[in-house]
Length: 142
Image (cartoon, rainbow, N blue to C red; front, side):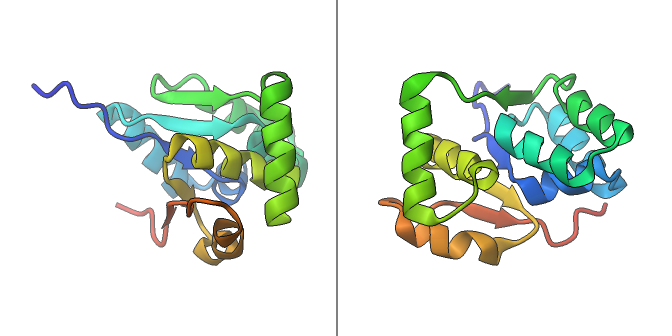
């Protein structure tokens, strides 16, 4: 058995919004990652943005349920250093705070962003010193 841990994947707000809306294919995809032990990072601000977009009790339950999966980690915004780094990403990329938190985590960790909209990340990626790694989910079905 290998001791290799796969590179974590970061969920962006577009994915989280669809999970909050109950998209069974995306929920199944994340559950599949969890079953395989594939780490998934959920930026807390992207989660907040997804909830603000959907704003239902069911959506809140689906989003908070992600944290119950063993391989999912909700990444908070901690301390002044991270706040300053987030502000820098916002200023450089023009992203709102929800998406900028995703970009800031991806930029520091060099982990790929899972998204439903690859094009959304192209301009922000060029604004950073190192390009973001982005994986578009075209069809999360079986």
